[in-house]
Length: 353
Image (cartoon, rainbow, N blue to C red):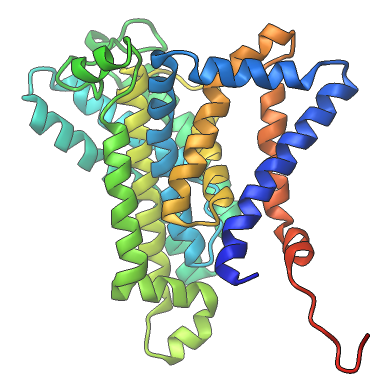
């Protein structure tokens, strides 16, 4: 089997094995997996509204996954996606709430730019520390998640003007000019929360594919990811590339946070923990093996699982078990070398039988 075929086969086999493992766990706890999965898929695809919700969920997942893929191509494991997404959400939400009468095209453009800048700055910090001090980006980005989470909550509670607050922990909803939801998309999908974020995400997929495969910067990012020392000898600036890759990664995560905040919730509120969408986006990228095109399909799968999970209640199965299925899929992606060993054609030994 060729390497290209293996790259497609490994995620598909991982999904199948994850679903099988989830079924085994359901059986162990006395649930009927066939009924559970039937409820899941019936709920996900049983109405136009839920199909719209799948595409709504895909928008931020794709953007955050693209951010992770850029950092991963440069050889870094950016766990700071939840914090970078939250910084974009809070910054863009604050701007939208403070300028409710701005024309819609200008408002959408400004919130996109603000989210990109906020996420990029949050991503630049671990990039700079890694480039100049050699710190672990894993540790720094984990710490940045907590810094952004608690700083963001404090800003919402203590810095946001009272005029834009509905309660002490939640703002009022943004104006129709700032909402990423549109009447025509909503009416098309029976009042689902689908929004323009899915179109922004598709454009971003094309941009990232072009960046990584057709530009000098993309070549440098992949080269540094493969061997930073060899890249230095070839005349590339590893430090510059490290910082730029983390800025780009954070920028896409910040934009994903904007789509989640202004497209799904339409306000800003205190978060009890790091954004789950950040970790889900990471999982989407891992499943897609950091391929921008693969991220589209992986995000669709995760959207189906998240929207269809409540349907498992039909079989009396806790919807939390869908998280087990998701984790199982990522586990099998993580041990892909086992799958590759199984599907890899064995070489014939010389003189062998």
